[in-house]
Image 1 (cartoon, rainbow, N blue to C red):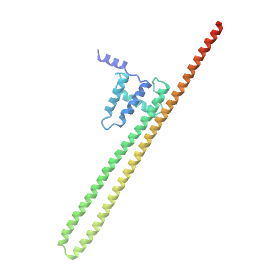
Image 2 (spheres, rainbow, N blue to C red; image 1 turned 45 degrees about the vertical axis):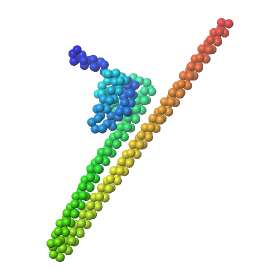
Image 3 (cartoon, helix red, strand yellow; image 1 turned 135 degrees about the horizontal axis):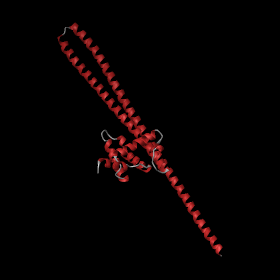
Image 4 (cartoon, one colour; image 1 turned 90 degrees about the vertical axis):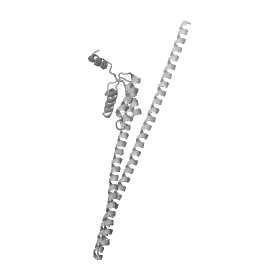
Length: 256
């Protein structure tokens, strides 16, 4: 078989997504979370998703097609054009797909905020480290200067000794003031980082709580719909049975 025949065969067997397949794909995305993968592991997570999708929908699926379909769904969701995507399905499936996309969008927002916060924390830690090194260097310089002064003091006449002592005290005050200012700035930055970490954690918890509330509301809605449908079906069956019973009674009366 020629390469062209192979290409035509692959093209003919390309997987066509239905809303049901979209739902399976989105559920895998929720479970595997490729958007929150550590550096260098995103491709591996998409391969894992594709492996699970092949088990459900056959070998015609590829990692690239799964990823592209998700990107298309996400883009359509952000543009509020999700229903415009060509795919067969029931109204209930469309609703479930919309809800899954909302959940994933929320989780992606949380992951992005968490990554930004981690980056900011790392940058500020590096900045704090720089301040600490500068403070330590200043302290070392001050000690070295003091040692030089002590050595010079032993060799200086009394008048010059008093001038040297005065200059040394002034230099020490300036260096101490600079050291205190640097240390204060470092502590302020550290406290600000902690406050931002706490705020990020609170926001993450709030989003998770919102997700839980949405899941509970969706479960309650599904339960109410099932109960309503069961009641309607039961009433229809009872009506049919009553109709058959009345028909039989009427036929018996006509025979008599």
